[in-house]
Length: 228
Ligand SMILES: Nc1ncnc2c1ncn2[C@@H]1O[C@H](COP(=O)(O)OP(=O)(O)OP(=O)(O)O)[C@@H](O)[C@H]1O
Image 1: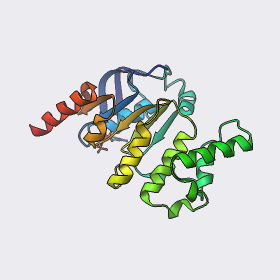
Image 2 (image 1 turned 90 degrees about the horizontal axis):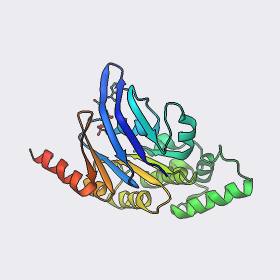
Image 3 (image 1 turned 45 degrees about the vertical axis):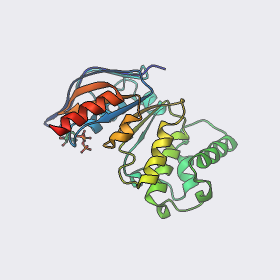
Image 4 (image 1 turned 60 degrees about the vertical axis):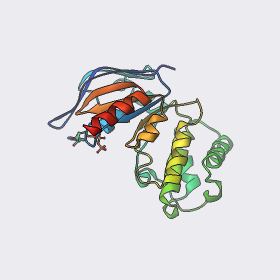
C-alpha cells in the first residue's frame, strides 16, 4: 500500500494561491495536518482527497493520480468533515449506512451483514431504526464514521472531525479513527493532543509546509511558533 507523495504541489482557488510548492512524502499510517486558521490545511486535505485539482506539481495518493484516476481514488478513500449534518443523506440510521454501499456489488444479505457489523462497531446498533435527524451531534458524527468505514476504505481523510463534539465524543471519534491497521488516516485538526497521537504531522503556514516529521517534534515546533 503506497502512501501520499506530493512534488511542488500548488493550488490556486479563484484569484488566490492557497498552496505553494508543497513537497511531501508521507508513508506513515496516520498523518495530522496542523496550522493556523486559513493556513491551507483543508485545501491540502482536499487536494489529497482529489476534491480540488493541483494547479501545479504532481500528486500521488495510494499510487494514483487524482487528476486522471479520480473515480478509482474516490472508491478507495473516504472523507469525513466536521459537520456531520452535511453527510447524512437518508432518513434512518441503517439506511444512511447502507447508502454508502450503493456502488458495491453485494448481495442483499452481504450488504445487510456489513451494515449491521458497522453499526455494532460504532455503537449505533440500538439506534438503527431511528431518524438520523433525532441523533445528537456526537451520534451523528459516529454515523458519518460508520458510513465511511462500512466501505472499508484504504485511506480516511478527516477534516476537523471532532470540532463540534464534547470531550467524551471527541475521544470516541478519535479512537475510532486511530484504531486498527486496515486504513491510513489524514487528519486535519486544531487539537494538538490529538495531532500528537498520529505517527507524523505536517505543519502548514501561509500555504506552505513549515515543518514535517514525527508528530511530537512537529507539534513542538508549532507550539514554539505560537509562543513567538
Ligand atoms: N474557494 C476558495 N476561493 C478562494 N479562496 C479560498 C477558497 N477556499 C479557501 N480559500 C482561502 O484559502 C486559504 C486557506 O483555506 P483553508 O480552508 O485551506 O484553510 P484552513 O487552514 O483549513 O483554515 P481553518 O483552520 O480556518 O479551517 C484561506 O485564506 C481561504 O480564505
